[in-house]
Amino acid sequence: MVKITLDYPVELGPHPKVTELAMRRPKAKDDLEARNQALTPDEVEIRLFAILTGQAFDVIAELDLETDYVKLQEAYRNFRRKPAAIGAGAAPTTSESSASASPPTA
Image (tube, rainbow, N blue to C red; front, side):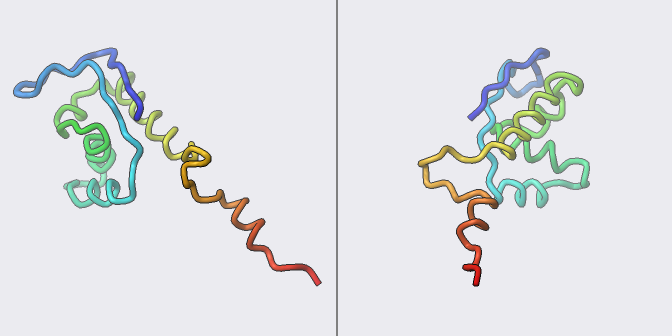
């Protein structure tokens, strides 16, 4: 989980004022759910961020585009780049799995 402090808090009644967001690691089902909820392709990322933060779509849509929304995008990209913790049952990386699965040479 990553905490993101907003430079421009969102006040959008009936929702409480949002000054910080907590984003969890994404799962494949989150992407599928976001795509199913989105009315247009442009909405998918906002829907996904709403799912990952537990916030309403309207709250994420109201984030400042140049600062706070960029922070969410960076947090999401970091989750996609960062492998799961070693020793926590993580699957091997592509290079590890291909190295162990290579056939013996004759």
